[in-house]
Length: 321
Length: 288
Image (cartoon, rainbow over all chains, first blue to last red; front, side, top):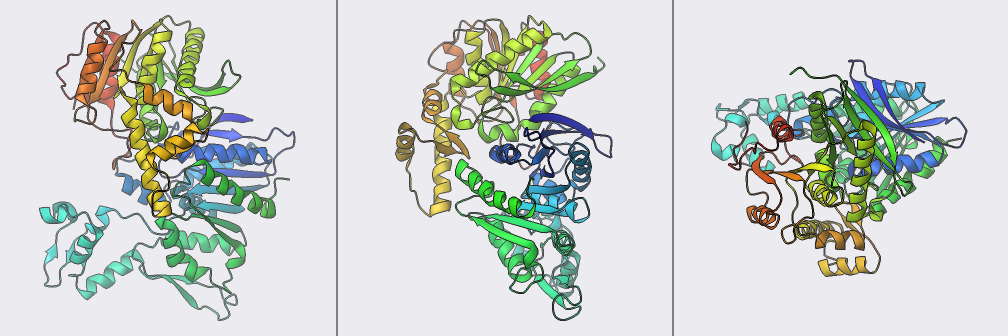
């Protein structure tokens, strides 16, 4: 049974959601909370969230989709920022508090003993960041999770020192030829003129080489650091959240779309370093590639494949009954 | 005028087919001046423009109008699947929603506001429900064939990504539909009847059988053909149609700046609603 719901977040905004409760007469034991992707509202791209929620509800799960403040039918407003900046904020945990407030609502309105967070893209990052610091969350289903932070013009707009000591102005004030540069390569050419000190400083600022500290005794050698990614935009918040969640023995399902760059970046910048043979985190994690799917898992075929991946995983780790 | 307190009520409305339509009604605390039914665009334009629709509903209701937004059957949180829908089914949904709104509010006067394909559907609905007082069209699609063909091209482009080549040409995709299969347009499954009905729609060639007043708000730049709009007005010369080119942000597309300020659009719509006789003028002046 689907019921529109409203609940107040900690900032006094009413958030809107849709609660899907099984009609089978049994109180649901497992709840699934779906976290919006980007700033799209709760039904998800191509109605993915609504259709999955209905299907999972038929299987006996209680599901809730909701809009964070400023999104969809909820109160509040978004900051006046570009879409890229909104994405960056989301990847840094912008929706964490609203998700945690939604978790509280879910648990208060269902006899659920276990709660899974679900999200696509920005929703996946939101889910892992919120879930890592919340003991009430038992598992994560993360679709097309981006492990790099969104590239935002202002990131490259901070002043830089040129190789000849020439100060490069921020992007907005840069000469027209730089303003018109639309390729990352153009910005790289500029960046190559930075002196070594500035390069090191930028790496430090972006946390360039993220190190995952492995707990003593679990990796064979005590305290050995594990290099994950040297990408300057690697999202270390995601990494720390992953570490926090996985090391607590909780389960994560990563679902990757085949025809999406984020999947290959996930593999090269994260999976190949963290989820290697013998990694202590491998047993907590499942990774599935959905063939033929794009970033949004658009199309009935891809949506069905997602359901076909999620269903047995849930049945194995958090069965409805 | 001070903003009125507004009650936002979500509900499911049952249709004649025993299917539920998800609706949200915004009711001012005082008896409403009139009722407005908002008609969504289709495909991903619905997602991109969602918050704009919410903001419009809140704006209009704070001025004393009751507003209802709803999801067509097969979309949003209504029952059904997209592939089960057609143009006709959506027009029927609009008529059902309008009838409910009229009954709930005891409202004599109902206006429709539609965006893009929603505006097209609203105009079609006004041919059947002659108690619709006016239709406000935000960037209406007047000739659907080009719009559908653009979506087909997107399908072909996605084939290049998926299969590194085109497996199904435009004709082959059409053939699949005629065989009873669906094809994916922007991730939505479209069947033959929907495609045929939509591509046959050409509001520039045949006059609407409607007597309601119409406000057409088009983008400032050439995002919509001026010729099509002129032809639409010419073929419906018996109708009272006001045209104004003032939409400056194509908020139904995925924009670099999300949720752009559209107060100028709401104000222009509400000004016309208050006094449709005082035409806004066709000078295409942009409101800052």
